[in-house]
Amino acid sequence: MTQTPPYDIVFFSLFRTDNPYSSISLSMAKELAKTNRVFYVNHPYSVLDVWRGLRAGDPFLRKRLSGMLLGRVGYEHLEAIPENFTAVQPPLTLPVNWLPKGFVYKVFQRFNNGIVLRAIRRVLRDHTVKKYIYINCYDPFFAGSLPAKMGAALHIYHCIDDITQNAYTNKHGTALENEAIGRADLTFVTSTNLQKLKAPFSDRIVLYFNAADVSVFHQVISNKYPRPDLLSGRPGKVIGFIGNLDDLRIDYPLLKKIAGAYPDHTLLLVGPVNSSGPADIGLDRCPNVVFAGSRPLAQLPPLLQHMDCVLIPFLCNTLTRSIYPLKINEYLAAGKPVVSTAFSEDIRGFSDCIYLAENEAEFIVQIEQALGPQDPVQVQQRLDIANENTWEARIGQLWEAVAVAVGG
Image (cartoon, rainbow, N blue to C red; front, side, top):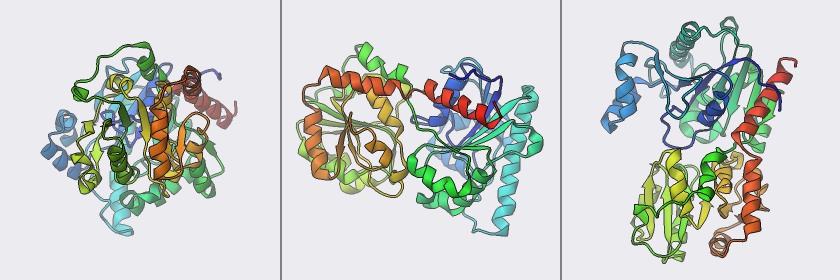
């Protein structure tokens, strides 16, 4: 493994530290903080975000609000990352994505960008940051790159999704992302398809797959947890999914067919519901479907241990074609049999160790196979593959790319 260079890391991310599901950027920051100081700059709240968050009773927003209203840069520390890690909350910004493309949008976007840049400058001053690498994780709306006078040794843009496939982010984000990629010293992409999509904008692209915090998910193998209360009184086996239940990725009709095909088993869905899809088709009214809601990473092993097979029920569309799912290595690190749709080139790369379905009928049948007796050899194969895809390994890859980019 390449020796860790003595750089601080300034990490600007779309995903705040209180993100309700597994975060690529926070997982990377946690691993980086084992050897380097990390300053993790949260995506700023807009005035509209504050209004919505207060109505929803967001406790993290309430904690941060007074400082943001006074234009202060807030510093936070996480119990989960006790050393070398400082979270940073910039002041409030203006909601501008609704504006049409053109001069007016550019003026207000520069205004917002200035707020974030000043926050980063404050971090550099307050913590005497001299030699550092700047990483922007999928947030080109702010500080897609830093001005040269801010002195970053290297700029990395981290592309994790096809930004064109969400109408909100595509409106202004596609142009901003391509500009950020063009300016970056390196661009990390999380899938083979993203590598193809971003090749026209840079010749400095690194294929950088997602990984897993295997130490967390190995607890499914090493520990013994009581059956969760939400499964109390539910006989039969448990078919599970962990992840964001959103509009763009999840095949809700498929989930409803699974619930109907296995009425004596429980379909357990763990994660935030960010879609009307379940209600629209009545998935939430199926008697054998349980929505567990958002759970912190540390609470996932007890739930996962009691899942007899796990799912990646993704739609096959333009967006998912560019996805290497974070959850695949998490599932494998728990030794669980995985049934997935064949949504991307990268998920097909796991065909030797998961059940890969080309259509709904195959998916239903393969769940039955996955629920069967578990071969210890297959379980070990899953663990071995997950052990090759750890965040420790990915950070080693990062330092190797940095070493090449700075000339050794």
